[in-house]
Every structure is written in C-alpha cells, then in structure tokens.
Length: 497
Ligand code: NAD
Figure 1: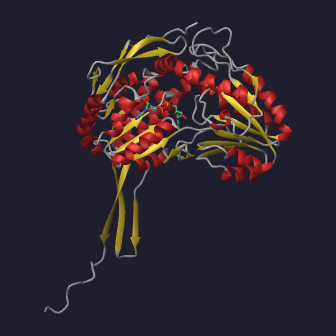
Figure 2 (figure 1 turned 90 degrees about the horizontal axis):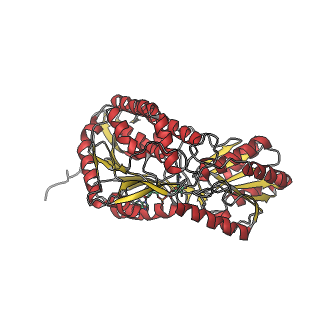
Figure 3 (figure 1 turned 30 degrees about the vertical axis):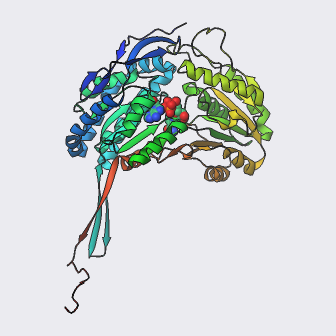
C-alpha cells in the first residue's frame, strides 16, 4: 500500500541566481517514492555547466552578502527559521514521502531545521573575535572574514535538516553557497527557493544544483571558484572528495560514516538503556549516522538485555511513512534496500538472528524491512565492522571494562559512542577511552548545537557546530600593531667601503 501522496511537483529544477532552471543539457533523473519504488517526479541532472553558472551567481552575490552586518544576517536567518516553521506540515510531508521517514520523525527533523537557523543567528551575533597584548608595546588581533563560495554536499538521510545544518552557518558567516542535494531525495530541497525568497535572502546567495555525485557533485568539488567544501556522506565518497580537494588546496569538512557502540554495564538503568538502544538503532529507519548499531552488554545482563531489545524490535510498527502510527518506514531506495538485505544475509551466516530481517507480510511492495537483531556477533563479522545504515542491530557480550573498550574501538569508525552505567566514574573513564568524536553517558542522542559535531578515525575530518562551524566558513587574519614607538632592529648601518 502506498502512502497518501502529498501534492508534489512533477519536475524539480535547479535554483541559480534566484531563478529556477532546467539542466543546461536538459537531462533529468527519475525520483522514486520508497513505499512503491515508482517514479513520481523528474529532477534536473546537473553537470559542470550548471555548476559553473551557479558558482558565477554565488560569486556575484558574495561581496554584498559578506559586507552585510552580522546583526542583519542574523535577522535574515531568523526569518528563514520563521518561514521554515510556517511550512512545517508541507516540509515534513515532502520529506516523509520522498525519503520514507515516518511522518512523526520527519516533523521532528523539520523543527530541527528551523532551530539550526535560530542557533546560528545567535552564534554570529554573540561570537567575538580575539585580541592579544604583549604588554603596552604590541597588540595583535584576529578578524574573521567569510571564505567565499561554499560548496555544500549532502546525503539522503534527513535531507532538509542536514542541508540546514550547513546552510545556516555558511550564511551566518557571510559565505554564499552552492548546494548539491542527494539525488535520491531532492523533493524537500525544492522548497528552498520559496523559503529563501520569502525570507528576503538576496538572489545568488544560495544556489541549488541537483544531479548525481560523480557529475554535479564532482564538478562542484573541482570548481576553482569554490574554496571550501562541506560534505556529509559515506566514508568512501568522503575519501575521494578529500583527494580532489587536495588537488585544489581547498578547505574540507568531512562528516562521514559510523558504526557506533553502545556499552551497557550490568548496573545500568536497564529500562532506559533498552529504550535508548531501540530508539538509537531503529528511529529514522536506522538511517542515522550516529545510530548505536553495535550494542556491547556486560555478560551478567546480556541474555536478559538481548531478549528485551529483541522483543521491542519485533513490536516496532513498520508501515507507510505517512501513517502517524508508523515507527519504521521503507528504506530510502531500492538499491539501498538490496544492500541492507545483503547485510542481513551475511549476518545470518556470521551470527544468530534473534528477530526480524525480512519483509513484513502486510507490506508486499516498497523497501520495507522488519528491524533485525543479531546476537553473539563476533568482532570480525561484517555486520560488526561495516556501516549498514539500516535497521540492523548487532549485540555482543563483554567481561569487564578493558574488553568493553577493546570491542568499542575495534572498528575503523569513531563517530559516536554511548555508555550506560550507574557508576559515573566508570562512565567517564569509558567516555575518555573510546575513540569517538561524541560520547553520551546515560543518555540517548541529545545534541547541544554549540558542541563540536564530527567523528574520529574513518568517521570524519574536522568539526562543525556552534563556533566550530563559523571557524570553518571563515578565514582568520591576524593584524599586528605596535602601540608604542616602533623600534625595528636597524640593519645596514655598517661603514661604507
Ligand atoms: P554518499 O557518500 O553516497 O553521497 C553523499 C553525497 O555526496 C550525495 O549528494 C552524492 O551525490 C554526493 N557525491 C557522491 N559522489 C560524489 C563525488 N565524486 N563528488 C562529489 N559529490 C559526490 O552518501 P549517502 O549514501 O548519500 O549517505 C549515507 C552516508 O552518509 C552514510 O555513510 C552516513 O553515515 C553518512 N552520514 C554522515 C553524517 C555525519 O554527520 N557524520 C550524517 C549523515 C549521514
């Protein structure tokens, strides 16, 4: 059964210099609905010519936007937030329809998108610059200016929210941008032109070019007029983009994949830990970069914990994304669905399947999967090591802190980690010992937007969030001034021959 379709555009175009545009060569890609896999729209398939036009528009708009006072940029950001909130229902319906996110969760992501703009409006008006004095003699101060045209490349999970996570700080910092949304989920990005125009963002400050990664994305990465790239996506693509950035000496921020551990000790608040594990692994259809997809449980609690998590996973309501009762919707695309099923197949050879892993009988078409829980997963199993990015959870027992940390750190990723224990000193010890950019103790994934967001090891390079984002989108310049009388060493006063 297909969810009720919201009224969607049948053609989604670029937005360049404040105007809608088709691809320069007229090509398009099909956009499908994950509940039926039927195409419902065509999106412009951009390439180097489209990117070049968008970069020109962004470069033309740059001087005025960069010169706009901070408080004025902040007002624009607040207006964007207001406009996103005004379109809340339509935005959530688009996101849910196009990506398969359950509507209730898509609503949460739409609210977060508005918050991102409010947050960075606050950051840019409160952030100071730095001054250093060397006694009374010398003053050095640092001013920060926007770097130029920012290239923003985003993935298909929570598409609009992740776009706002990059657009807000880039605009706050005074950059103009070219955004390349993911080709599987372009629908919510079709709302940007209307939102940004209503909010009074000048033409050319934000440009959107659709298309595939190797065509539109690569053209953006390679364009000499774009000095920085903010990328969120897979580790494989990130590595490739970073190499291209090196060729052009571009700044790059890389938010990449994860295989985050949840470490549960026997003294934990078990009810809260079960809730958090089920939410962390299966909300957003398991397509969450910080999903706690490996759960390590202290042996005395292991059997009970596994049963409780499996019972809850079996009870998850899998269904059409538009149904408010749905807790897990269809996976974003049939290619991704096949990939996740392949991992389930590997999992059955590598570990014990406790529940799920198949198509629910009441959903004969679309990319639906009953969330899968695997137990006794060995550390060298593919489902322990590799990011699946779907509703598939791996559990394994451990004995003692040392083994817990060893297992937590046994993958190439280091995005997030979660620790559950009633011994807070131990909680902090584990948090410090785990290789991860972000650790939560006795908490599910609650963000503070001021903190650095990003990962260690193969999960990323650099951090965004609060002042860290402004750091990335601006170039610091140190200015040194003599306050007293200048007394440079005098050279060249020797006797003339
Ligand atoms: P992906 O790497 O396939 O694609 C991401 C984006 O990059 C898309 O817009 C794609 O078109 C573009 N792209 C692909 N090849 C490119 C190239 N050669 N040059 C420029 N752009 C190119 O990732 P995905 O499958 O869309 O997203 C899922 C991945 O994103 C997962 O690995 C997930 O962990 C990661 N992710 C990370 C975070 C984080 O903050 N760390 C957040 C969300 C998602």
